[in-house]
Length: 413
Image (cartoon, rainbow, N blue to C red):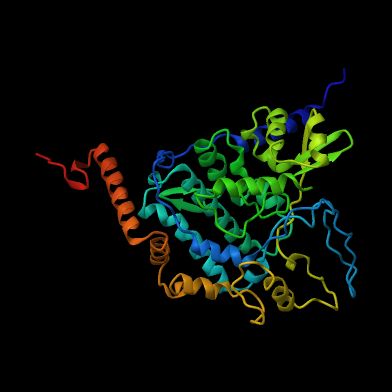
């Protein structure tokens, strides 16, 4: 038997090590582990709804038809490279509208930091698990969008998402005083709080065609399970999720990157997919013995900007195209005949009480978060937060809690 070269063995071992580290469980702060299953408190995401409702284009369910081959535009020999099996799939986000638009970028960032700051005012442990799940998914997705807007018009995101210096490992957030990366949420908090629950992965927007959809509305505790099931069905029944080819059954590499939910990858993933798949692919999956996670499309889910007619003499009008698409979207605040382009910043500014005039990020965060609850509910939640902090301080030996809500200095005599 021929032996493999030592250099190959070392390289293979290194790759296995890298993969293992990427998928290894991450430690989770104790404050993020608790929940109140009897809680009826809810979080409002009106600001997130404005962004997603205006900027997301719902493509609809895949027909599994291939996209037409790309041809060079008039006046140029250049053409965009696309994967014809998947290019027409997946909801789109209008990244183009944020390019060189500081006002739009500021709005998105403000909402991101307001979401991250919410647990500074109210304890996450006061909410039930579904309400917490909606919170983590919304925070993850808005942060993902905010980071991708800064990179746009980067077209292929493979390096950004999987490279050694991927931004997913950067501590981009501070939640309840804890620095967090997006991978901390995906590989730490979610698997810890929702073990053996692969449905949660369909709420993690990756910014690419080859992953689950970004939705036109925020996740909410009361509907998060239904929303995730809808995303799962849409993804599984699309070429970017599953494909039957001859004797092989191929699945998205997204499942491999979330293999911690599928201990026996082939068997567990197959059982999971059977809950959603239909058509000819269902028959093929039933007889499949092995699943190959080699479907991918790292193309950013923009509308058209990163594949603009490079150097073409007949470049399309951005405003005209966007106006045409926007006015057809259900729930779009723009009325037919209004100026081209979705003025979501104005809509969000009105909704969030002239957010652009706020002098500091902390004031902005408090203003936005206060609007997520009624005054009575906010008061209750802040009281719970105070009790939680008092109990913690007492445990640490710095204060004494004599009665609920009553905190005094420790007697030093």
